[in-house]
Length: 258
Length: 276
Image (cartoon, rainbow over all chains, first blue to last red; front, side, top):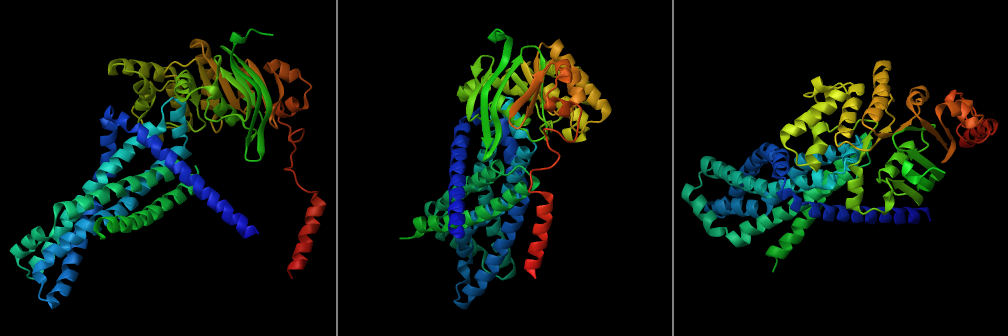
C-alpha cells in the first residue's frame, strides 16, 4: 500500500509543478508587451544569455562541422560521392545538429546560469523584496530573460550551423581534397530554404521557448536554500535536454515525415 | 474603544497554518498610527509570517487584516501593489539587489514607480542615503558592505518612496553592538522625523523595548501578553516574565516535546538487542 501512496504523491506533485509551470508561463507572456517600453532590460539579458554563450557555440560548431566533414568524407568516398560532402554537412547541421546541439549547449551554459541566478535571488529574498516594493518580479526579472532566450537561441543556432559548414569545408576541402566548387554548389543545390533552413529556424524557436521557460521556472520554483538551488540547476539541464531531444523527434516527424 | 482611524493596521481573529502546523490561532492586533510597535516572541512563532500577511504576500485562512482601512486579502492585484507602495519592508537579509550598487538600489523603487528626471532621482537618493549615513558609500556594491551597513542601505531603499508604514524583520539579529545601537537610534528617529508607523519583529528584548511604544508578545499562535514596555515589565503574565527576563524554562519549555527520557533510553536498548 505504501508504494501506491508514494506513486499517488509523486503523480500529484508532478501535476502541481506542471500547473505552476504553465501559470508562470502565461504570467511571463503577459509581461512581454511591457518589454517594448524597457528595451534596455532585454538588451542587457541578450548580452548575458546570448553574447556570453557565443564562444562555446562557435567552438563546438567548428568541431562538430569538422567531424562531420571527416566522417562524411570517409563514408562518401566508398561510393565515389565525396563531391556531395557539402550537402551532407549543411543538411545535417541546418536540419538537426544546429538547433539541437545549440539548445543542449544553451541549457548547460545559459539555462543553468538563469536558474541559479533566479534561485539565489529567491533565496536571498530579493524577489520578495521586489514584490514588497510593488514591483512584479515576473515582469521585471523573468520577462526580459525569457525574451532574451527566445531571441538568442535561433541566432546562436544559425551561427552554429554557419561555423559548422566552415568546419566541414576546412576538413573536406582543405585536408581531404574535395573540390572547392563542388562543396559549395552541391550544398546550394541540395539545401532548400523553406524545407531545410526555415524548418531548422522553427525548431530553434521552439527550443528557445522551452529551454528558457524550464530554466526560469526551475529558478523561480526552487526551494530557497543552497541545496534547493543546486537541485534546481541540475534539473534545468536534465529536463531541458530531455525536452529538446523529445521535441526534436516530434518536430522532425511533423516536418520531414510523409 | 478607540476610533478606528487611529489604527493603521487592524488584525481580527487571524488564523493561518502551514501544512498541518498552526501558526496563528486567533490573533487580534492593532497598530496605532505614528507609533513604534514591537511584535516579539520566541523563534519559530511566525513573526515574519505575520509581516508577510500584512504585506499581502500570504493569505490568511480566516480572519481579517486591514491596512489603512483596506482589507489586504480582498484587494485586487493592482490595488495591492498600490498599497504596497505606501509600505516599506526591511528584510532580515537586507535583500539588496546584488547586481546593483547602493545608489542604484535606492533609486530602484523611484525609477520603477515614478517618471522623475534623473537629477531629481539623484537628489532623493542622496537624501535617503544621507539619512542613514551612507551617502559616501553610494558607489559600493552590496557585497562590499558589512551586515550593519547593508541593513541601513536597505532601510534607505525602504523609505525611498516615502511610505506611511515600515516593517522591520529582525533588524538587530547578528549585528555588532555599534551597528545595533545605530539601527536602534535610526528606527526611532526615522519614525518620528518622517511621521511613519513602524512595526518591529524581533526577539532582542532590550533593544526593541527601548524604542517601542507598544509590545505584543506572541507564542503558540496567540497573543499572550501586550502593553507598553512598562506595563509588560510589571505584568504577572508568566509568558511576559519568561520572555523579558530570558529565563530558560517556563511556559516555553526548555525541552522539545518528547516521550519521557527513561522510556526513550530503554527503547534504545531494546532495539539494539533486537538488532543482534
